[in-house]
Image (cartoon, rainbow, N blue to C red; front, top):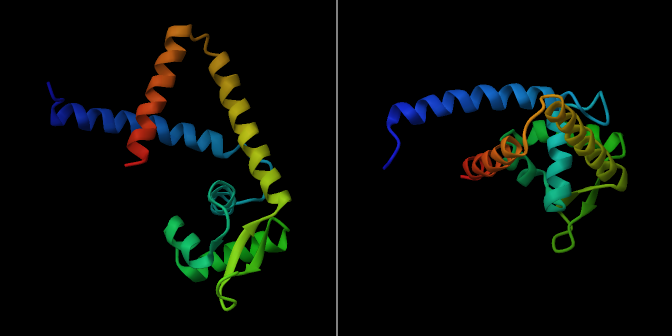
Length: 146
């Protein structure tokens, strides 16, 4: 039996509200307080997918190339990324994350995971409820990857 349109809409509203509130709380947890969400997103992308061109980063983050250039310039000035000549085409430049940039991403992820674990522990969930949350997170990833 397929869910009704009203059920999909109600689930979407509940999911949007809960996801937005949780994401806002987690974004406050970061290794570098002065770093913007956009800057962190670029670092996380580079850490997960490896070096990339400015254009591909802009496309991935849905921003203009000049906007991405400003973001990368800031990260470069902070020593978190470097520009590397492309091995195949010397006219192109690749953006790569530095060891310090990797450390910022790892530390931020750790802070966010710890904050969420503390919040979960403070709510006295049962093992069954925690399993439900894990199951729900798998479904949320499925929606997010669509």
